[in-house]
Length: 158
Image 1 (cartoon, one colour):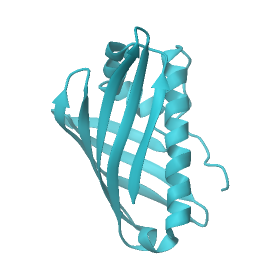
Image 2 (cartoon, rainbow, N blue to C red):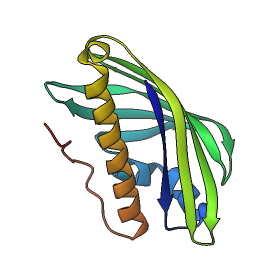
Image 3 (cartoon, rainbow, N blue to C red):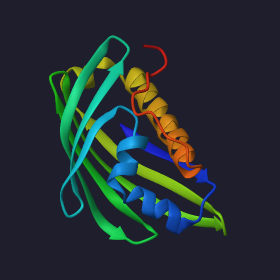
Image 4 (cartoon, rainbow, N blue to C red):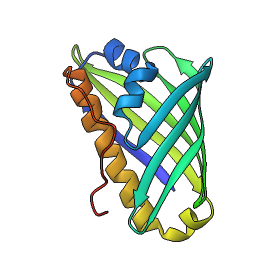
Protein backbone atom coordinates (compact mmCIF):
# COMPACT_ATOMS: atom_id res chain seq x y z
CA UNK A 1 0.00 0.00 0.00
CA UNK A 2 1.40 3.38 -1.02
CA UNK A 3 1.48 6.15 1.61
CA UNK A 4 2.00 9.65 0.21
CA UNK A 5 0.96 13.17 1.04
CA UNK A 6 1.93 16.69 2.05
CA UNK A 7 0.78 19.10 4.71
CA UNK A 8 1.56 22.75 5.40
CA UNK A 9 2.36 23.64 9.02
CA UNK A 10 2.46 27.18 10.39
CA UNK A 11 5.86 26.91 12.04
CA UNK A 12 9.47 27.27 10.91
CA UNK A 13 11.43 24.15 9.92
CA UNK A 14 13.57 24.04 13.13
CA UNK A 15 10.42 23.99 15.29
CA UNK A 16 8.78 21.22 13.25
CA UNK A 17 12.05 19.25 13.24
CA UNK A 18 12.44 19.52 17.02
CA UNK A 19 8.90 18.22 17.53
CA UNK A 20 9.39 15.32 15.11
CA UNK A 21 12.53 14.31 16.99
CA UNK A 22 10.94 14.56 20.48
CA UNK A 23 9.65 11.23 21.82
CA UNK A 24 7.18 12.80 24.27
CA UNK A 25 5.65 15.03 21.58
CA UNK A 26 5.31 12.15 19.15
CA UNK A 27 3.70 9.96 21.82
CA UNK A 28 1.04 12.67 22.21
CA UNK A 29 0.41 13.50 18.54
CA UNK A 30 0.55 10.12 16.77
CA UNK A 31 -3.00 8.74 16.76
CA UNK A 32 -3.65 5.34 18.35
CA UNK A 33 -0.19 5.17 19.99
CA UNK A 34 -0.58 4.22 23.64
CA UNK A 35 3.15 3.92 24.35
CA UNK A 36 6.32 5.18 22.65
CA UNK A 37 9.59 4.40 24.37
CA UNK A 38 13.11 5.21 23.22
CA UNK A 39 15.20 2.02 23.22
CA UNK A 40 18.40 3.31 21.59
CA UNK A 41 19.78 5.95 19.27
CA UNK A 42 16.94 6.64 16.83
CA UNK A 43 15.15 3.44 17.87
CA UNK A 44 11.81 3.17 19.62
CA UNK A 45 9.35 0.58 20.91
CA UNK A 46 5.74 1.42 20.07
CA UNK A 47 2.38 0.05 21.11
CA UNK A 48 -0.74 1.12 19.21
CA UNK A 49 -4.44 0.32 19.49
CA UNK A 50 -6.11 0.54 16.09
CA UNK A 51 -9.74 -0.08 15.12
CA UNK A 52 -10.56 -0.63 11.46
CA UNK A 53 -14.27 -1.21 11.05
CA UNK A 54 -14.88 -4.79 12.20
CA UNK A 55 -11.17 -5.40 12.76
CA UNK A 56 -9.27 -4.08 15.75
CA UNK A 57 -6.03 -4.98 17.42
CA UNK A 58 -3.14 -4.04 19.58
CA UNK A 59 0.10 -3.64 17.65
CA UNK A 60 3.57 -3.72 19.14
CA UNK A 61 6.89 -3.38 17.47
CA UNK A 62 9.67 -1.04 16.56
CA UNK A 63 10.24 2.30 14.89
CA UNK A 64 13.67 3.21 13.56
CA UNK A 65 14.88 6.48 12.06
CA UNK A 66 17.61 6.34 9.42
CA UNK A 67 19.17 8.64 6.82
CA UNK A 68 18.68 11.54 9.27
CA UNK A 69 19.38 14.97 7.81
CA UNK A 70 18.80 17.67 10.43
CA UNK A 71 15.99 20.09 9.48
CA UNK A 72 15.56 18.26 6.14
CA UNK A 73 14.13 14.81 6.84
CA UNK A 74 14.68 11.14 7.56
CA UNK A 75 13.46 7.67 6.70
CA UNK A 76 11.02 6.05 9.12
CA UNK A 77 11.06 2.24 9.30
CA UNK A 78 8.10 0.66 11.08
CA UNK A 79 7.62 -2.99 12.02
CA UNK A 80 4.44 -3.74 13.95
CA UNK A 81 2.94 -7.10 14.90
CA UNK A 82 -0.47 -8.14 16.20
CA UNK A 83 -2.83 -11.10 16.35
CA UNK A 84 -4.63 -9.74 13.28
CA UNK A 85 -1.52 -9.36 11.13
CA UNK A 86 1.72 -7.52 10.66
CA UNK A 87 2.69 -4.20 9.11
CA UNK A 88 6.11 -3.32 7.72
CA UNK A 89 6.57 0.18 6.32
CA UNK A 90 9.34 2.43 5.08
CA UNK A 91 8.43 6.09 4.71
CA UNK A 92 10.59 9.06 3.67
CA UNK A 93 9.75 12.23 5.63
CA UNK A 94 10.86 15.53 4.07
CA UNK A 95 10.66 19.09 5.42
CA UNK A 96 10.72 22.09 3.12
CA UNK A 97 10.59 25.74 4.16
CA UNK A 98 7.77 27.55 2.37
CA UNK A 99 8.06 30.88 4.16
CA UNK A 100 9.81 32.10 7.32
CA UNK A 101 7.11 30.60 9.50
CA UNK A 102 5.76 27.80 7.34
CA UNK A 103 6.99 24.28 6.66
CA UNK A 104 5.73 21.77 4.15
CA UNK A 105 6.06 18.24 5.43
CA UNK A 106 5.79 15.48 2.88
CA UNK A 107 5.84 11.72 3.22
CA UNK A 108 6.26 8.99 0.66
CA UNK A 109 6.54 5.31 1.32
CA UNK A 110 5.14 1.86 1.14
CA UNK A 111 3.50 -0.41 3.73
CA UNK A 112 3.35 -4.18 3.44
CA UNK A 113 0.57 -5.91 5.34
CA UNK A 114 0.06 -9.58 6.16
CA UNK A 115 -2.52 -11.74 7.88
CA UNK A 116 -6.07 -10.51 8.43
CA UNK A 117 -4.88 -6.95 7.80
CA UNK A 118 -3.94 -7.84 4.24
CA UNK A 119 -7.29 -9.58 3.71
CA UNK A 120 -9.37 -6.72 5.18
CA UNK A 121 -9.40 -4.88 1.90
CA UNK A 122 -7.42 -2.06 0.37
CA UNK A 123 -10.32 0.39 0.62
CA UNK A 124 -10.79 -0.12 4.38
CA UNK A 125 -7.06 0.00 5.14
CA UNK A 126 -6.52 3.02 2.89
CA UNK A 127 -9.40 4.85 4.61
CA UNK A 128 -7.94 4.13 8.04
CA UNK A 129 -4.50 5.32 6.91
CA UNK A 130 -6.02 8.56 5.58
CA UNK A 131 -7.95 9.13 8.82
CA UNK A 132 -4.88 8.49 10.98
CA UNK A 133 -2.80 10.85 8.83
CA UNK A 134 -5.39 13.63 9.18
CA UNK A 135 -5.53 13.08 12.95
CA UNK A 136 -1.73 13.20 13.16
CA UNK A 137 -1.54 16.58 11.43
CA UNK A 138 -4.47 17.96 13.42
CA UNK A 139 -2.78 16.85 16.67
CA UNK A 140 0.56 18.24 15.46
CA UNK A 141 -1.06 21.63 14.76
CA UNK A 142 -2.62 21.62 18.25
CA UNK A 143 0.78 20.85 19.77
CA UNK A 144 2.33 23.70 17.77
CA UNK A 145 -0.32 26.03 19.16
CA UNK A 146 0.57 24.87 22.68
CA UNK A 147 -2.63 22.95 23.28
CA UNK A 148 -2.64 19.56 24.96
CA UNK A 149 -3.45 16.67 22.67
CA UNK A 150 -5.47 13.59 23.57
CA UNK A 151 -3.83 10.40 22.33
CA UNK A 152 -7.00 8.34 22.79
CA UNK A 153 -9.08 9.25 19.75
CA UNK A 154 -11.66 7.23 17.96
CA UNK A 155 -11.43 6.67 14.25
CA UNK A 156 -14.62 7.80 12.47
CA UNK A 157 -16.74 4.96 11.17
CA UNK A 158 -16.05 2.61 14.06
